[in-house]
Image (tube, rainbow, N blue to C red; front, side, top):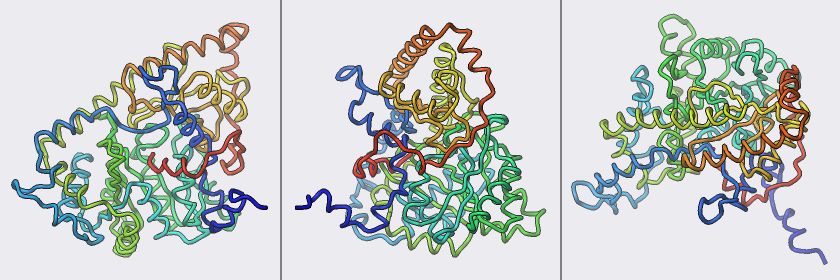
Length: 489
């Protein structure tokens, strides 16, 4: 007699049962281990500290203070009268006009009003995950490809490929220039795609970068725009971390700013304008991933129309739109929030960087994001991806810190890790640094001394190519149920 468990996979479609969702990645495995044994300063002080979650919990008090002062928004009232019945009824796919107008203004404010957003070009989605997938459905057929600079967010392997059938071709970037994208790397990725007989439909970038925590320089954006213009392909700029950029010089530059500057100079501007699209979300800047608010911004009427139809599979609730229309419509609040939130992010980033430096660990210089790109290669037993995985398992299981290894982000060099800092208190971050410091000290004592570590760190071994995550075999695998809960970065 065949068991029910053995029969269950046969009940699924090929799409549902396929292995292209990337849930066997160490990125998701670390999440599962954390959920089994989560840290709590009182109830479970020996548990795993979650440093693999890019979540902004630093400014909740600012939002809570606004809610207390504006009870009508949360109570679904207007002028003291209930609007419950109005919001409870079906809303069309275009969303509430008041929220579209408020979000368009807020996005412009984030960019110093250097870019104006037309509310009619905004499509609401249930988070950035839905926005990116919807754009894939709109722009790529099964087997078409998008080029993405490495390292990139591990969830893209699921978000962009699983249901759409699209392919990702990595644009390999290296530490030699701080992982900046080069024209040579783009050309190389394009050639590799052609050798695989893939039709390249576009380039997707995250700006600021996840996992690097750096804003893309204007010169690099101009080069990327030149590349997509020359190839006649699309450019998607995922700018969900735009409000986390805490450095004023050079600061965050949206691809739309580069496009606007190009307008009076380029004969191909109109055609290019139709092929540049921006993804945004309130999950990072406002710290509201549970609200599931994402957006696509495109000047292409056909893309806006198709994406709007697709948004029916993941709408933003009317109640959420009503509340956030009031919140983002308060200019005094948004002005103060943006400034204070950036200050707090930088302060917490500095705490992590200083803590790592004190124990001999360096990281890429960052100016945005909710994480740092940390170089722990000198702590590995070998300069290889096997050595990286061995170190990662020790950090998760022995040290009790869930961090994300660079190989899960398709980094071409072993030894880099994404470490998040904004989803915990300052005291918890101190505990994490103490644990990591104790671990580093044990490694030093186990070697022939600090000199051995320094000699190992000096060995030039950052030239290896990273195998695709689909070809990497992890010791453990996630169940679909737990992986499905990881829909937000």
